[in-house]
Length: 198
Length: 253
Image 1 (spheres, each protein chain N blue to C red):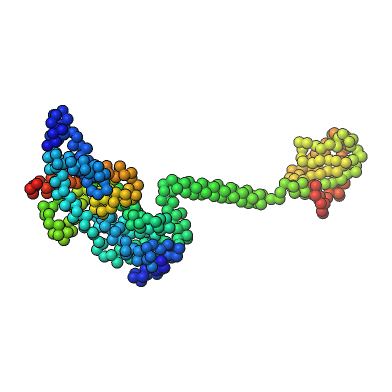
Image 2 (image 1 turned 180 degrees about the vertical axis):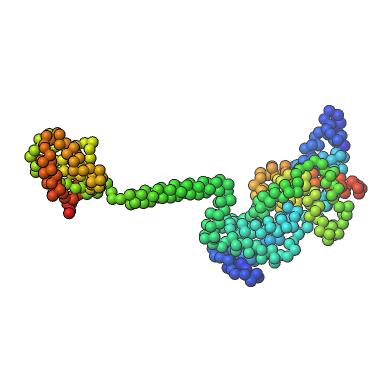
């Protein structure tokens, strides 16, 4: 935990006193190891690359400042995701105001924004997956969006979601139920009915 | 179809039995760890018997295929090294000691608040007003001092103004004490113990306007009941004893 700027060539910031996590030699190593996790959650929640990049920077600044509060008996990613969630929720408020991402029951209006293409390799190549998530989650409340992102898009357990969000198990399941019902309904109406062979 | 729902009174919206509502919730919480084994078994039993719920379950599975694709999507930043460098730079900026800059920034920053701006403006106005009032007072004092300096010696030295005095023993012998009081209304002359006292500034006026003959009336000849010869003697004595003195001050020639 002595050199946080090994690859940047910039002067070393004062890092003495910062505890090491996961046996990393430097904070830079820790950032490089965990920034993909933070970025993935931030992008899937915020659905905006620039916002996600800024959020990840803010996340690791908070990690740096509050590393002494990290409980070594718990998974580092759980603590990291907690910070990412807090940062993203804060940013989501202003972002949603700017984009008018208010909850609406007019699901049909959102369906038109989903692409016709269902070949995921093609959608991935076109960079449309983030846009699909954005359209699907547009009708969710902030809590539903967060719980759905953590549970279904980041594949975290219910217990982890409970710990990260601070919600009760019942609240997590209720929010998850409504979020899935909304998103599955949209997917079924957009793609499922079209190729109905059930 | 679940035969338990044959009674139309227990059917809900969408042609589905009301008891399906409970399973609707379980259908959407069908991932591991979300429902108990007992609930999972009840759901399986229900799906075998309820065709609408079974159809919805299959649609959900189809939709979950899309969600699985989104779950496996692991986005990475366009330039991870640039992101890392940005993080470290930001940490360095926020960790740098900023006592001096921070203090100045905080003070200047405080003036961005309207209340602080108005308070500062009020303080400045009060200070300027006080300075102006004091400046006017000082200028007034200087002006008064200049007037005093220009108007002559202070009041304490007025007592030493020059006066001419003259002595006449004849006058002292021939006049009764009650007649030798000052002669008001004629000229500013006082007579005490046979000694005449006249302010120096009035001498020229006396010499210009009064003759020897008028002196008799000046000194109150009728009151003294003396003849002309005696008056001439008195005048002679007065002339010969004229002395310049300073009333209340030192005597000089």
